[in-house]
Amino acid sequence: MIPNPTPPPDLTSFFNRFSNEELHQIGLALIQQSQHSIQMQQQVHHPASSQHSPHRLPRIIRPSLETISSIPPLMNHQPNCSEVRPLMEQQTTPVTSTPRRPASDSFDNSDGNRQRMKKRLRINDLPPRNEQVEQHHLPTLVPPHHHQHYFNMNVLKRAVSSNLPCFFIIFGASVEPKNIPSSIQVAIMLKKLFADNQIPIKELSMCVQAGERRFKFAVGDKVNFLTLFNWTWPEEIDNKKAEFIKPHTLPDCYALVVRYVPLDINQDIARQEILKTIPAAVGFSSIHYHHRQRPSYDIRFTVRSLEQYQTALELGRLSIGQHYLPLTTFLTGYRLTYCTACWKIGHMRDKCQSPVSCRKCLGSYTNGVNHSCQNDTFICAQCGGNHFSLDSICPIVKKYREELKLAVDKALASGAIKRSAPGEVSRPFQQQTNDFPLLNQGQVISRPAWTTSDNGSLHSNLKQEMSDLVVTIKALSETMIRTEKSFNDLNNRIEVQ
Image 1 (cartoon, helix red, strand yellow):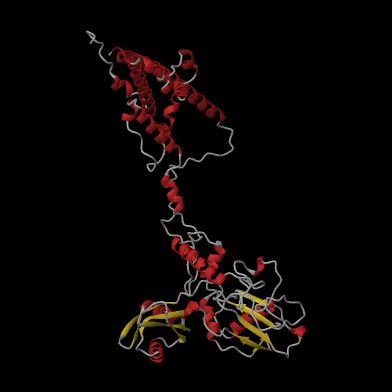
Image 2: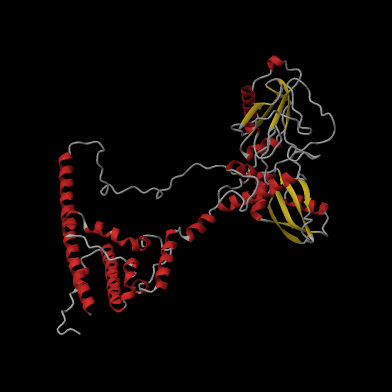
């Protein structure tokens, strides 16, 4: 012990003048100074091991006063803290990153702690594991495991779409070929026909020629489709003999399913009970689940009235005998994307370079020649088997459906796509009062973008900011000089003790 030791300086008021970043760098420098002092003491007691100590932890290089006066000290200390730089970078990482190493590792000079410290630094260089997990769980539109097919957004939207069937108009043989109207003229004739019969059809979604005398047209609204489907079409249009052909059945978007009908109830009795509740129900069929062992079956039917369809869904149940059974919508199978030219799955006809071929024998069509299959066998465009190219018994089509179902289910769960409901009409955007509040005009400072009148004030402000920055740098340099002196005094005290 040294008599009358020098009292320690008041470090509290001294360190209060620094920011958190400056205090962090000062602490790192203090830790290295302490480690160096401990090494010096070990060199005194263990001279043999002093040869290897300088290589393990080099002594910090103090900048000279000339360098401090020319370059800010914070820049001078960055190269000297290279060993602890990952720890400094670690503070700027999110909370999910690797936690900071404890302070005891910095003061311990054992080899085991050094190895653990190096291992932590190597781990910090790698990306955080949480980020990898988040990237793994991002919603993708591809099945989770590796598959042969890839489905883009158009394929997924087409899988859940419910496009309404088309109507056809065929002009009779009494109409001369030169008097057959064009597709635009047919659309005008149809609009006039709807207006004369007071049918509220505003527009057609499609009207194209599909043959020498045949045209097909469609509507985009499902209410309009039911109106045309239930209407009795005339035999003439614009004084021309014509035949109108409408779809044989309603699409699946108008179908309902009665669930869990007991097996002891006959299908005819169940059909009569459904007609008592929903008079517009047509097209009944039963659904039996052979892969499920349950004492019930389901009944599927379509509704020709959109009002009855929506009301039945709102009620949600239907009475058959003594049972009050649930009533739900019919979810049709996902639609396949296939080509009507080569009859292969995965693309559409507009993207195909192959010639148009027969669906049965895959023989190419020739313009002006009526095609006839040479034999009665089928040829699958997917596997070459004796069945239709889109038959469900094809192993390639079966696998494609399974993969498509996984991808569509994942897209529906993530919200990337959604099913369209019957009668769903896109509503225009309606702005509410508080959706976009106005900014306070008193807080808005508008400055012209290309003005030169305030250049003098702008230059004066820049000069003032530069002078303030120079004063701040000088003050910081003086502070670092005083800090260096304090470190020297503290180092001398530690060495003396």
